Image 1: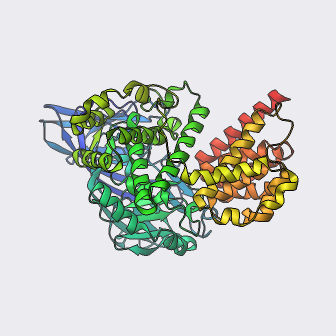
Image 2: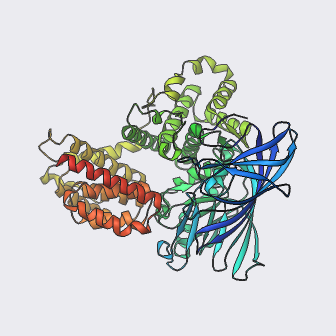
Image 3: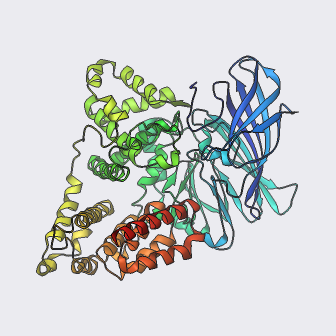
Length: 630
């Protein structure tokens, strides 16, 4: 057991949590959960009598151990780690003995793990809604626990909610009954027998409906989205079977997908038995289901084998991207995997540019001493991690050979938490006949050096070439050439290629803005953008990834008609990946600066607090930059 996790106060050298039993009562009037948790804790040393749990903004009412009252005190509050809860047992334990520590408490209305939505913030507009997001270190604001991914435990829960609402959790559903204390409430029961880290505990309460989409899968959402979601995610079982063929049996029993209200700030979250997904994935043509392939892959890498601390987050995300793209390879072919890898390399470049090439947060393994893991979050662990695994795949003998290693690594470390050192020493053991090749890898440059990786893999550009060719035709076209463009140009592209085509144009126009004094002529004049709409009718595309890039391009090329559409997309959903850049784009169109601020202020109250805070910061930073320009 490791001695330290820089993001946690809890004492894992002295004891480990084996099981949690949660009793939750969800109070929508006060925006709190009234709760009791029983932690089954195993002593790792003799004469064990004191332990520390992580908490954040919790009101602790009482603590007992094996039914006897226990002394407790709360330490000083840390800016993002919360407050340590120190507990003194009324007796001593020997190494290997268990104690049940029971904490009665209440969450704060501002708990960082919990989002309380008003009826207006939901699709149905009639009932309130609650959802949790515990990754990375927010579970402690919902449950006092050893809030570190190095500790894995099973959990059972019972949840009391108003009788018009339904509760679901990251666990197997285990029945429901009327609440004996209050006939206006229902109790839902859950059990999660597979040990998992605390950040994967998740709860949702709302006006939910479900549809079966496979032998072990349902979709859950408000009724407004449920049929759309059932269609969009109908390939889930095929993806699960493909993943099992690559990585071994799926151990979690059920694999359900919950589509959240539009304000959910992320694309997806891999909560066991119940993946959370944004409604922006509902493209109508199943084209964004690779996000589901990613969340399915986490069932092995992340949930079954977990990073021991957030510094080793790439072990979760790099392997998951690798698996997600192997699923894509099985279903769509190798050219598709290569195409996705090219897009990933671009995303990595964007992150490195945003942080700065010397920023230690662009290390594959960053140091998180006194760093809030939320602020370290980026595509670096995903795409630098993938690039390393792909590089090793090339060195070790190709995808089948390397997938053999990944599967073996999963079997070796299943149900446990690992560091990069554990992973690397297993890599050397598995490929013991190729150690001389592995020794030539510049491990220090890959793992502990900021910026782009030391090696750029040579990806196959077959599917990207068509996107590059079409974008160059538009950039180079003179006004008199515009008649040569036809609807057919985009009809032959997949939606993935169309996304890439628009990304390339955005990159060109951005490059132009940075070097504007060098070029007398616009790379993409407004006439061209208007012609593009006339020929391709891009306004009609409902795929969120296409629409997002198209509207950014229109606003960046100063097409005023696109401004209301861009602001509408920025506010009718709240996925940060879309909302933040759309607001920035309108804000930088001088004529509509005030408009961007007005629309933000009008919608702020309905936004997810994390999203609202970051958009406010973006606009404030933009204002500062504008004042400097003036």
